[in-house]
Amino acid sequence: MLTRRNFLTAAVGAAAAAGLAACAKEDGKSSDSPGGGSKTLTLGFSQVGSESGWRTANSDSVKSAAKESGYTLKFSDAQQKQENQISAIRNYIAQKVDVIAFSPVVVTGWDAVLKEAKAAKIPVVLTDRSVETSDESLYVTLVGSDFTDEGRRAAKILEKVLDKAGHKGPVKIAQLEGTTGAAPAIERAKGFKEVMDADHADDWKIVVSQTGEFTRAGGKQVMAAFLQSNPDINVLYAHNDDMGLGAIQAIEAAGKKPGKDILIVTVDGVKDGFIAMSEGKINAIVECNPLLGPQLMDVVQKVKDGEKLERWIKTEESDFLQDQAKDALPSRKY
Ligand code: GZL
Image (cartoon, rainbow, N blue to C red; front, side):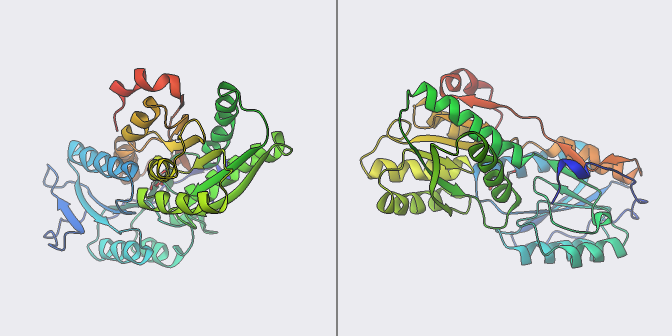
C-alpha cells in the first residue's frame, strides 16, 4: 500500500514499441477510440466499473483527455470484478499497447498480471486506487488522492458539523464502507479512526459499520438495516456520496430527517451530493476529485518519453460545509 514514506522518485523504463489499434470489440464492455496521428500512442485502460457518479465522471475525464491528446484509447469496464480487470490487462499486453493504466478494484492479487506486463516491457500506471505489492517495479506511478487523509478530513469536518448543530451528548456513528478490500474503503476508515481515537475516544463511537459497495442501492439497503438495529444513530459517515444518497432515502423512509436527526458526512463531491447538501440533507462533503484524465495523459506521455516520475502524483481537493453548497454548485465540474 502506498504511504507517504515510500514517496519515491522512480526511474522509468524504456517505452514499449507503439502498438497499432486493433478493431474495436463489439462486446459493449470495451471500446477503441482511434487517436489522431499515424504513430499515435496507444493506451490500454481498465476501469473499475460504473458504480457511482464519481466513477462516471472519472471515465468521462479519461476518455475526453485521451481524445484531446490524440491517443488511441482502449477502454474496458470491469463491472467491479477483479477477474475482468486482469483479463483486460492481458488483452492489452497481447495487443502490445504502449502503456497500460488502471484503477484497481481491490488492493491485492495483482502481482502475477503486472509481472506479465513487465515481461512484455509495457509500463503500467495506477490511477485513483493503489495496490499492495512488494515489487515497486511493477508500476511506474499512482495518479490519485490520499484516501487516508480524506478519512482524517472527514473526522475533522464532522467536528465542525457537530459544533454547528449544537450537538450535545454521545456521538453514535454509522459507517457505510466502500467496496471491501478497496484502497478508498480501507484508507478512509483508517484516517477517520485515527482522528476519532486521538481526539474523541471518550465521546465518539462507531456503533455499526458495513459495506454498501459504493452504490446508492447498497447505501439504502444497509442504512435501512442499520436503523433497525441501531435506531439511536445520530451521525452517518459514508465513504462516498452515492451511498450517502441511498442512505438518505432509508432515513426518510424511517420518518427521520437527514442532516438534522442524523448528521451526514460523505466523500466525493459529485453534483447530486452538492444538491442534497444545498437541500440540508448532507452536512459536509470531503472532495475526492475524479477528473484525473489530463494528469494521466501527461504522465503517459512522460512514461513513453522515459522521463523520471514521482511515485505518487497526488490530486488537489478541498472540503465543503452545508452553507457553501449553493455558491459552489454552479462551478462544480462533475
Ligand atoms: C475514490 C474512488 C471511489 C469513489 C467512489 O478515488 O476510487 O470509487 O470515492 C468510487 O465513488 O466508487
